Image 1 (cartoon, helix red, strand yellow):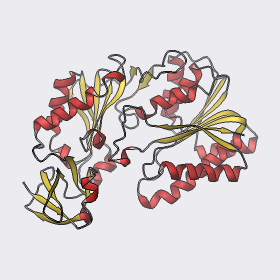
Image 2 (cartoon, rainbow, N blue to C red; image 1 turned 180 degrees about the vertical axis):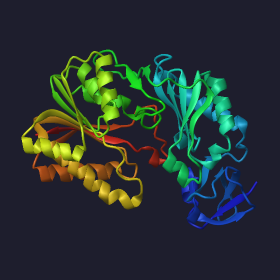
Image 3 (tube, rainbow, N blue to C red; image 1 turned 180 degrees about the horizontal axis):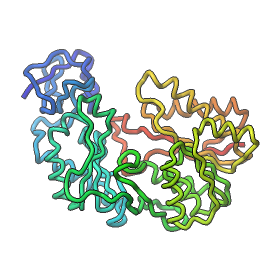
Image 4 (spheres, rainbow, N blue to C red; image 1 turned 90 degrees about the vertical axis):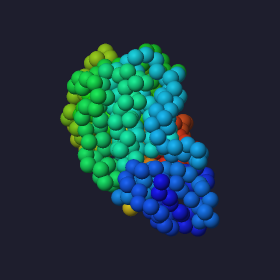
Length: 401
């Protein structure tokens, strides 16, 4: 096995069980590890620290997977890790048709592997060399432990490119999923009524099919929407709108730049027999909000759930300006006492920075804004304390006066 020795002062995160070793932290490499090989990591004094998986083309040269010197990164390790992750979600699975994240990469000790369950189908994302060379083992373990009808891959092209991997998408095992599935979201206590049924396109939808990380937040935000006129921005397939409609919203306006997403949202509202009248607006949210402000439109509740604005550290400042802009516009469109549910899924934008951005928007909008609730990703996306990067989704429910 090849070995890695880290530079003086760079061993502390490893001792504290952070799972990343960057190229700049490495003093020297003994041996010639191939991509995906297990490597031992030593401190500058020669002490053994951890074992991980090598990636020669990535800035993240080693993804650490064990701090037990007796644990080989073999088939048994992989299968046991998958089984443990699945068992940790057992209480979230209301039935065979539940949509749920089963494996969340580093948070579950399986760096580079994401597995989402959509009823009888599994969707896999493999994003590191370590998991790429174990692809057949991953599929074998999933099929054996979960007996799905099919396992489908939806690789993230940008992430795989940074890792030196080619694009990957298609059927890995069993049956291919149909164009549209009807599924049940995670059951959330406190939601007034039966949860809606999700319509999901596993082959063409966003992420692995839809945004599973917002399941709990849709239920929470719906509690503020009874009798409200709701504006749902970046609505995608209408998850927030469906929940709000079933909770008693008076009127829904859903805005997205994708006509296909709006058609899915329309179908979801109809499928769940949402009684509230709904308007579907195709367009750029920044432009639409300005048009509504100029026209004097007002709303009782607004949801801002934009896509990731910052993909690298160099984009954070620009992202902050974008978040401030849409939050300021939303505050100007709310009636006094209205509800703003605002989110950021940019992991590089910390919760503290996001709160400062919303604060700046409130000052410029000249509105008094109270944070009523702080929100994060759903419980099937657990946050590993030694890996703060796993907390990427943050949100506030605000009262705007």
